[in-house]
Image (cartoon, rainbow, N blue to C red; front, top):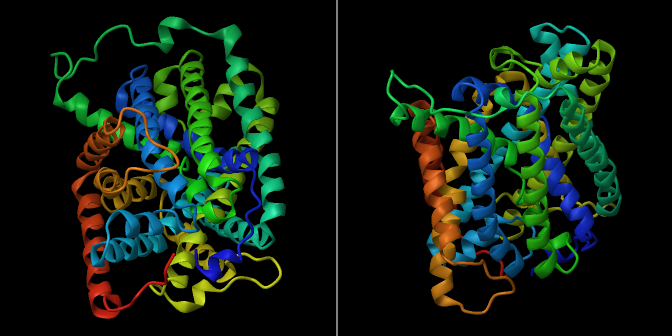
Amino acid sequence: MSDSQATLSRSLSLTQATAINMIDMVGIGPFITLSLIVSLMAGPWSIAAWLVGAVLAYADGCVWAELGARWPQAGGSYVFLQKIFPGRGGRMMSFLFVWQTVIQAPLVVASAAIGFAQYFSYLVPLGFYEKKVLSGALVLMMVWLLYRNIQSIGKLSLVLWCITGGTLLWLIGSGIPHFHWQQAFPHSWPKVGGQGMKLVFVAALGQASLKAVYSYLGYYNVCHLGAEIKVPERNIPRAIFISISGIAVLYLLMQTMVMGNLDGQVIAKSEFVVSLYFEQIYNHATAQVATALILCIALASLFSVLLGYSRVPYAAAVDGLFFEVFGRVHPRHRIPHVSLLMLGGLGFLFSLLFKMKEVITAIITMRIIVQFLAQAVGVMAWHRREKERPWRMPLFPLPAILSMLIWFLIFCTAGWWYIAGAGGIIGLGIGLYWLFLRHSVPAKQ
């Protein structure tokens, strides 16, 4: 580990690391994507998309757990790609990851801020420009909250997780007395063009799964904070699988309860699904309280996202594969403050420019090749070279192969515009690397 990375404080416990993961995973995502998934899957079959997301999170989580336990350093995939692809190929892959992070991390930040402004409109009607002002101001507030030491951040994450978990449990418990079984579960195969399940259903499932996966993203956030986790060879895998298990159960129960209490067409057309859910079960005043809690969850996710991703450009700068200024650590708070300010600034800009649905699809599509597929392929090659590892995935290599297959399905159904955009960003990154950085020598880890 380099001297610069050693200046980060290894202070996050398993409980704090798991809380950071879980608040990153939930956020505003499930409350926004629920209606999108129901509209794509024609009602109760939307549960299939949430199941695909859970399976993918477990399979891909095995890849992340192996790599995070072996190399618990700041930057996550930036470090992993260099290790599992030795030589110039690994350095280029790492640079491409950082290059994509500079674009997609602010998109993730923007999606949380845009979703916050959308749900806030249930409490106070806002026009287009008012929503943009609110989303931009929210990003700036999160940067201010993160401009402090990691010990304070770890404690704050526990408070935010209590709000997140408590709200989801309230949502699930509230629907039990009014639950309609036939409305919640699929009882026949969907009809596609008058003939059972065909390729159209598979395509719809791929697009719906893309939205569901967006709501699961964040199970790997603890890997970005590897240099700040206590006993990382044990706590990183534990944090990953505890957070996936907890969130998967909560999402499946949430989907089931909402479908069992609201008409499918109402869900598909609403921007405030969960608010309407509480309004139908209780009253408008209670729905406003629930909406306020959902907004707190959105704040928690934005907090966690900025925290994790700010370590990626920092790690690259320390190794000489990104601008040196991003390797600076705040002398008092001991955080990568320049990297935090850069991502926060771009997140502010993107929150003013883009729409929610576009952002979600772009986030997932952009990352599949360089990050998720590359790591799954690389970890299998790494197994041949190195036999000893702190944590070993069960049933190797089945989890890695399964994650590759699901990621490929999602990528192919994303839409040609997004696929072409992802390819263009990768191509531009390769060009930048060969022009400016191919002769750089990263610092030894």
